[in-house]
Amino acid sequence: MRQKLARVLGGVAITALVLTSAVACKADSGSEGGGGDKAACDLKIGFFGPLTGDAAGLGIHMRNGTKLAIDQYNKENADCKVALSEYDSQGDPAKAPPLAQKAAGDTKVVGMVGPAFSGESEVAGPTFDEAGLAVITPSATNPTLTTKGWKIFHRGVGNDTSQGPAAGRYIKNVLKAEKVYVVDDQSAYGVGLADEVKKVIGTPVGQDKIQVKQTNFSAVVTKIVGSGATALFFGGYYTEAGLLLKQLKGAGWKGTMIAGDGVNDANFIKVAGQNVAEGTILTCPCAPATAAKGTFVTDYKAAFENAQPGTYADVSYDIAKIFLEGIKAGKTSRADLLAFVKSYNKAGAATGVTYKFESSGELDPAQVLVWAFKVSAGQVVPDVEIPKA
Image 1: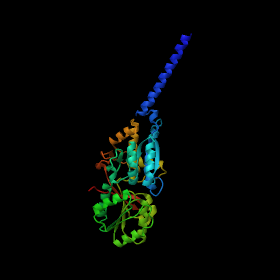
Image 2: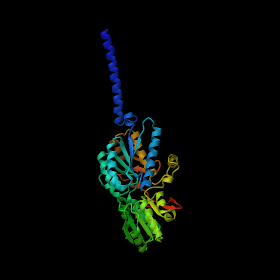
Image 3: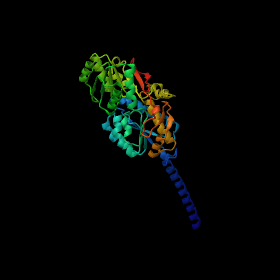
Image 4: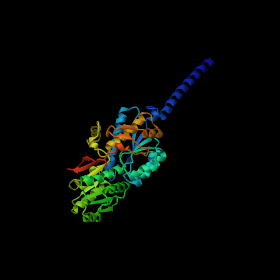
């Protein structure tokens, strides 16, 4: 009897051991990158950029594009979802380091859409690089970001060596402005963009600097009006651009403001006022998001209370889908997903751009384009794709 009972109990123990081992193996295989196992089903993609503050209008559309891609993925993969982690930098480089540390410290975060701006990218980059966290920015355009030696940084659009010269060519060839004043906000983005414009237009009739969050531009306004400039290029973001232009027009200036993608947002019109903003030219190393391919525009409007997709919403959507495609393919560690991004070579569903990155992290130059937009009747509307030099 004892021997029989011992054999029964032994059999139960062996069966339990086999079942426990099988479960453990399944969990281990998921953590090593096998698609669909539970251990790889609680991963996160981050979004890093301004969601509150003066520049939130730009960041919210990028976050929304990212969220749309993740929500669609989760609907199709209900048994193995991916979460969105948001890191609200307010567009302020001073706030970026602790946010970067928080993201890097969460090992479930395996890919980052952003940082959105160049200044925050400069200070967050070293932390992400040390953590081996793959980064694809949809909008940070300062050219020096790909010269830092970071292994993790990729750019989903052209940089300011494409946007700045294109803006300069528009000023020379379309506006035919002979007297151009140049102002920047002293940010990494604003200075870099303004410098590239000056290389094309030559010596401006005058140039000056302002500060982020500055509200009184009387001294700069006096200089611009007195210079006889018929065009003003502004390197910076939409809040300061709107206030500066409002004060310029209030002083009787009749010229045209040209600015880059940091101003290319409907909130610029709200800050400046519709009549003041009318005719302003805004460039972007991107195509119009409102004319994106496939069902993106319809899906975006359905998801976000009928809102039109803003600048870089479509780029962010495509970037998020790169990470999601990698996760679906079993690239569930940071190292594996980074390698997946580096070897990626496919067209985005929304932009149609082929996302193929050079060794530096720059987008393949053949895929870079720059558009000019115009403020017309209270809206930012596409004007023309600016030809390459």
